[in-house]
Length: 535
Image 1 (spheres, rainbow, N blue to C red):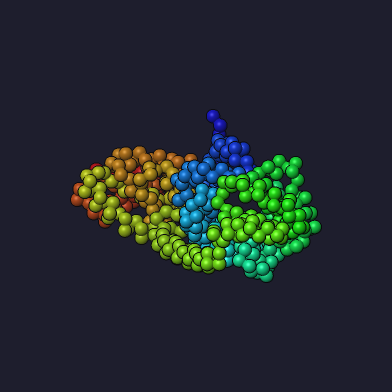
Image 2: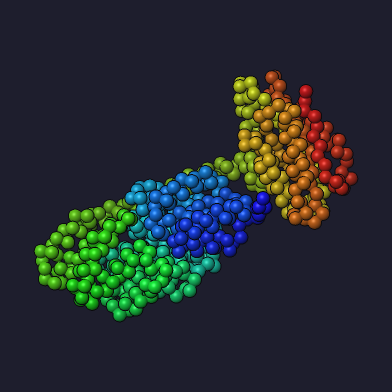
């Protein structure tokens, strides 16, 4: 049988998975993820990241139904993952919802993702990527001011974390480009040129980075050509389009081809090659897209109308301008601005709610071990006792005490002592049954509430004590050995929470007496002592 690695996934493994996602190879990534799960005990955080990357690979090849299935498969992993991984998962989920033409669901997921990535989040490359993707989805939804605001934050976070800014700038360029197109349709020429100029500058920086993923490089070069065409820099635009080499293995990607077709049509129109521009634009208009992209569809209609205007064909120009304005207008633009404001307020509200929940959780959790604290335990035990007595089910309370813990701190230092507490708490959670209640009562004492009779509880405690004694403590500190003493009490019919705890505490005192005085020395051979349960 293959021995799985217990350490976190190596960075190079995650980087390779990210490359496969960025380049749009979902099938290869699926096989790679299966291999990682076969070779490693992947924790919830990395497992959710791998699922998010697989979703991204499907999105990058516009296989949105497959992305949606992956999204549902990953749901059980979300609660145990870190906020940044949850946010990344939600952001790719928003891309998926947009691809499936569910804009309200896409907005909801973006709101939740941005709330998870509040202003107090630690700057990191992953946070920057997540924010950049949020900005792009908001731009797809035509919430442009909000999209640019988020995109600028993504660039700032990349700079603050020491990561390359190229991907964030590539993402920001999309928001500026799309906003420029919209403003041009509304006759706001100067404002549109400002957005195209900003988009071109961001793409200049992004394309100068040799580490920009190939798929992003091809799309970025085509989008830069579109910006330059709209700014009248036709020669520079054709040079930019030459960077999209048709021989490249990713050149057939549907997103790349649409970006190239749009750039070529824009350049032909800017050069006055109206017949060629019209042929290219009609081909784009007649080709259905799997993604809901109303702005770009309207842009094709707008350019066809401009082409007909330039050719003197008033009837055809009227047809295309009517086609565009039936879908689009200044009133709709104002509505989108209001929608963006509402989305921003929802982010702020979601962040406040999340912070309130975190404060409540912090008040009831032990910050060192992550298990419930004494306050939570004192509030929960009476409920557990009352529920067990009402249902006639067994309940045994166990107290676990780390032997000679002061000696560990004095000999190896308090950081080692803290790590011992964290690992013991983790072993109790992992080795005990799902419904067991685990808490840190204080100092070096932890508590388990077991829904079993005393004899079965004694067996569980014995297994836990052996697991703790056999843990490779030498990897924490040379010469370190850790054992525990436990006391337990089975609930009687007349027990209250106070009497049950008193009985378990007396059982622990008996176990401590059995282990003998510390004398400043830890035992040479690890052992476990459990006092007999109250009969």
